[in-house]
Image (cartoon, rainbow, N blue to C red; front, side, top):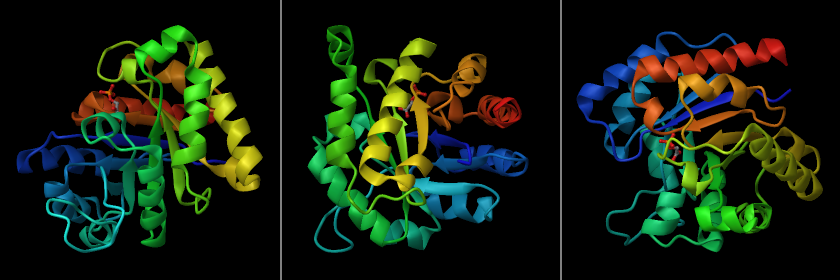
Length: 250
Ligand code: PGA
């Protein structure tokens, strides 16, 4: 059975004073689910010290190479050295603001896997693609080209994040999320066999305490990647509780 995962993506938010939110989440780990917080790189060392293995800590990006002349970048091995064991790759904000392509994301993932990190691979369609009915085509393209052959159930989590749902308060219908997640499962099993069966599939985009329960009830949704609502322990805690409760209904 796939262990459910609640992942928080703090993006470019959080200063030292916000580490208290990590302590608040780590001090009440859920009975069944796994929890991951990805704070900005500046907080990683302290976040990992606070977490003490009670929850997982991850980075939000890494370079395709392990070291070298890349001003301003951070490598997968540096993330490991900080105490992180996960990294988010291919987030739509990186794809758009830093022109990251599927090919580049795939190389980053290979490097991250070799460094021992679990990669949270983000993909999803724009509002325009969604309106044109191109969602599954875009999702398939991202899945095929951004996941490297090194992907396994243990080192890879896939997050479906429709770009139009991120930070907008909008979410696809339950039927739409279900269709995309079933499709991703089918494609992953086709390519990776039993490993594809074991990869966790997260939904991301405007997940909040009020909609988490119905999203977590979808069969191929193994958790969520949460942006805004992960910044406050009270909200993220409520989402974690909803995820943990979903185990009992499964
Ligand atoms: P949101 O962001 O929960 O604020 O919509 C999700 C994400 O971008 O990972």
